[in-house]
Length: 474
Ligand code: G16
Image 1 (spheres, rainbow, N blue to C red):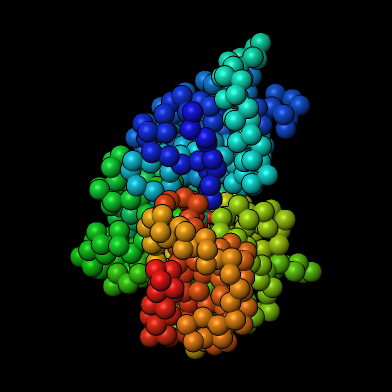
Image 2 (spheres, rainbow, N blue to C red; image 1 turned 60 degrees about the vertical axis):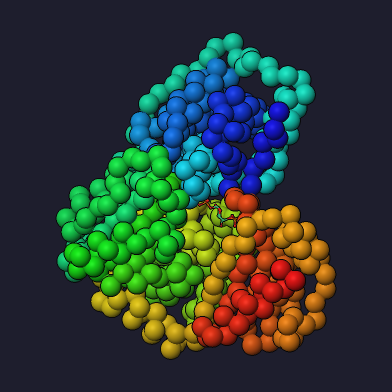
């Protein structure tokens, strides 16, 4: 039997190869054992699913299995974004939640994201217990659930309360008053019927594309990266829209197109939003509260420059929103985010929320009455220019070995640059005297080696990226 391993965010595998009903059942049994051992009374688990092939059926089978274990199962009545499920876990005081999704990965994948009772993605100490439960069950050959009294399965709407909560966190009135013209692209994913619905209900002018279920996602991964947003760009130009707002397969990531279809990278967006929230949300910085900002080790240091400007501390985490979720839960953050388009704010779910990010974008444009590009230029003038970039290198045996061997060495210089600091929080990060840096790490969600670079100009970034690629392929 193939081992079931939880990576950066849950377990992901190819449908019909490893992601089968029997393997899902093994994973669910492992989660059920964990939930039962962590709770004395009858626990409750929420179960959701995205728009992928069979996600709804994996979820329904899981609800039955949980009930057979004696765990009350609340099953979503429709596809549900991961942040909406996180909100429902907190609101209903459930003991955790499972979302069937492979997030932004290509259509042939599916996955399980498991969140604990705090609504945050399960931390490694939890997933390692689940993995151990699964491995033990393998050795003993699968035993059927032993609960004497199966619990109930109930169909539930997780959308209404989540959307109502967003209306309290975002100034929808400001968006409506500025008569913005928005285009929303849920990329055929679970965001459909959430972001667009909330905007329409709030009287905001919005057009939706890709708002239906297509288990092949139109032939592209449901990832709101610039290369997948050409149709959104086209519709924006045709309709004269001022913003394009996209979300990924489970709507925990966002993709933003500014006026004219200009892509704003999540790195730059995070820094802009930090600056905006630090100025506009005094209630987020009430008396005596000493919170700051968290970014992953792979995220732009423009965030640090903005944080310095507002006198806020910065927390650096490994890649994986679970680490930022933990800090939100401890109430240490105004904003937390990652370069891979993850974002949440104080008093919101300890999980990334692409829908919230899209709404705050429209609010920021409405309040400042400037395009995002204009706001970014102003920010660069205030704290300096930062040019981040990321490349994925397919994970061949040669690249894997090259990465393994090179990531443990000590470096005092790198391709003619003096190394100021070596950082091994996650992969190998080398920081140079002029503030530029590179980071190599193996992805925990897809078979690629990620190469991240940041420099203070586009030209310097290009040179650094070439040097970094040469280093990996040498
Ligand atoms: C997941 C995690 C993110 C992480 C991203 C990329 O996103 O939740 O925290 O940044 O994967 O991780 P890696 O570089 O290891 O592939 P998602 O949207 O797929 O759940």
